[in-house]
Image (cartoon, rainbow, N blue to C red; front, side):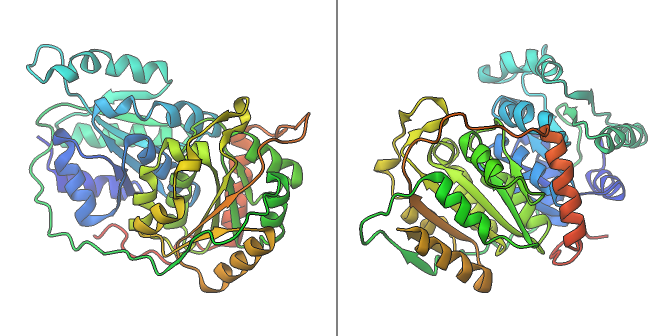
Length: 390
């Protein structure tokens, strides 16, 4: 068996200090180590964990994701449509529940047989993690080289690989909403293009803008293709988790997440994670047109959801309904002055202009340009509250 603390410190020497994951009994001791000694974000699901880790990589970290192999299926979307096209590497540890030949619960039987095949189909390099520390060190060096080449790498962890690591007593914070402004008058209902132009006008050299999948990113690109911007492709629902990882790993930046109703509905558990970890440098703006605009205008169920109430209940410091562009501009300026994790909900018109363009740059080129912008405009070490302890 691996001494978990020694193994974790070897990871630390290689620069892996940021973890996100979802619990698994096979990985509990490594998870306990990460919670005890490092930056650890407990995600609502495995796909969110991958997106959080990807955001941390954008912010200058070498991230680790931890999950059960049943949850690997949940992580497929970001791994193939976020990490792959943007070349955002993560180091993964996935348990092997349902290992052929060993008794286990029936729900793990099929995934146990196909875990390695699934990783290979996703073009994720992998190996079984050795239970011998010296061999595991060599494996970690090999994995780290893949990360340095922008390639994800996963270790498959069998039962009994890690020695016991006792979880320290956790002092859990209580996040309370301080400002909640519900809808109290008629909406202006501007177009998405008008709203995005207003948001873009208020950016500065300290601002990064992450635009959700589909027409939101495409319209922001047409308004201004700036090095501040990242235009999501695929991985619907992951944009605020990406923003969370970036905001936590680089406190110097103002991270503006521009979301859509279809996207947020897909992964609403991310609101609870965002609210708990509560980065003061993140502004989450929901543009709600009540339809899946990028796929033909099919209705969502957002008309039946009180997002302001939900975000407030999840611990966002400020949760505000936005009625007009003037209202939006005022609250963005206020946020720039006062900060605090904030959620703005704004109803907009459905639709967009015909012949809407697409970014000419490849996703990984957009990422590389954004990383250069981040490095030139911030100090990635400032504001770290609890890096891995020696």
